[in-house]
Picture 1: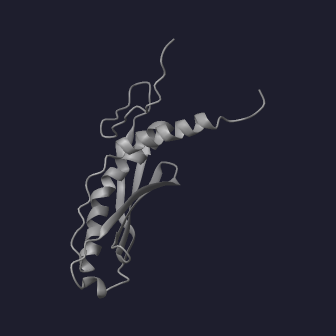
Picture 2 (picture 1 turned 30 degrees about the horizontal axis):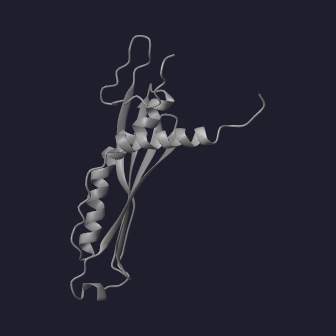
Picture 3 (picture 1 turned 30 degrees about the vertical axis):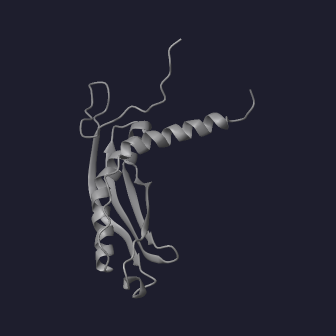
Length: 173
């Protein structure tokens, strides 16, 4: 019996080429833009007194929404909260977005590209925008390390598959 591998095939949109039997595949960034940004430092100027050593809570999330048939908006949200033991030092959040145009991909391929390649393109812009806000708030930069969105996508797909296996659909047999 053949073993079934649920790991999704990795698709590189830059190398996607149509064959004679399949429609040509094309993936393009139509535009990138800052959709939303915010910065709060509710305890200034008191937080500037003394030597603070905040702890950072960093969250990254992406959301995909169809705009037109072959056009999707991907929004990458990066949130950083800096806290001391009892106070919020600052909260900075950025929503970096992009419009991505695609043709010739099946649903699985498109889902993967929009969940990996698109956030990878948006992340450097989001990182710069969030750090700019933090710096303008009077605080030193927070170094955000690169994120492997491919690994996060595979992990997400595996979690969904595990959840489906735990809760199989019910119906008439």
